[in-house]
Length: 119
Image (cartoon, rainbow, N blue to C red; front, side, top):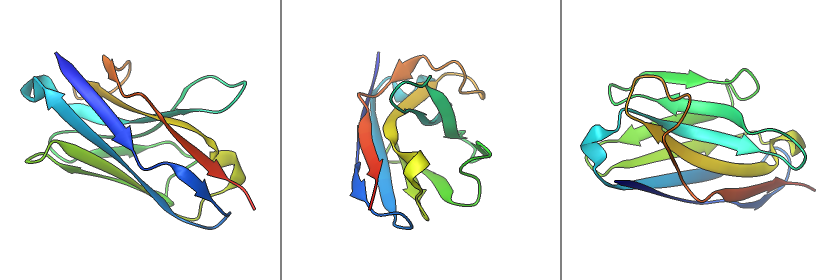
C-alpha cells in the first residue's frame, strides 16, 4: 500500500510564493508519476502538475511558467514551488500518485493542503 502526506499550504498575498511538499511511504517502488491536483469551492478537481520517476514534467496551462514541480526519489518527496500566485489559485491542493507514466487518473491521494491567495 502507498500513503501520501502533503503539507505546506497557507495564506499568501497575490504575487507571493508558497511551496507544497508531499512525502510518499509504503510500497514506493510501485509509483512512477506523482503530482498535484486542486479543487476550488464549487469546482471540479483539476490537474496542476506532474513528474515522472525519470524527471519528465507536465503542467496545466494555467500554472505553466509560475509553478515548478521537483522530485527527490531518494527521499520519496516531491515539491511544488508556486510563484506569482493569483487569487484564482486559491484551492485545496491534493498530492497524487500512480504506477504509470501518466498520472491521470491517480491511484493514491494525499489529504490535501489549503492554499489561499488574498490581499
